[in-house]
Length: 151
Image (cartoon, rainbow, N blue to C red; front, side, top):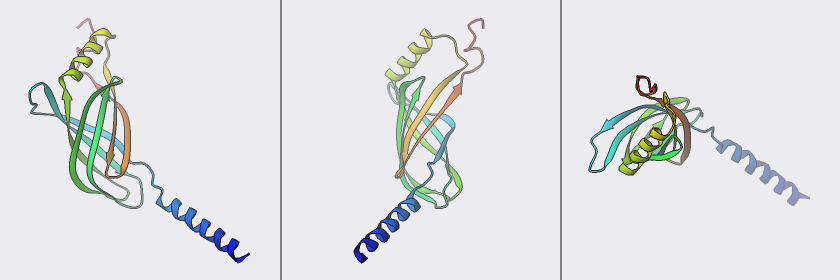
């Protein structure tokens, strides 16, 4: 009987401890995209990510990686060895350099040329910040005049 009670108590403590370790997912949005000098047949950009931590403990990180898709097609990827901390119930902006291979640019241009005119392009960003995984969806507005074939 004591053994069974002890096992039950241990199980309750373990499950309770697991509940304490659960974290709400990070909230990530693209805050901006800036051009960087490219090399050869590739383009480079700094993707600025706004990272929000909705948890009551800070998230320390040492490194970030991301992949970006445009209009459902693979477009850019990047990594950075930045380290820091996202404060509890706080936010930071991190700039991650990404590379866009020439083939990805050609695929996007062909995809836009074949499709109907659009005023924005949907994106998806997936990545890791330290041990936390994140994903965000959004869209990038196109400059005026590109979306309307009459202009």
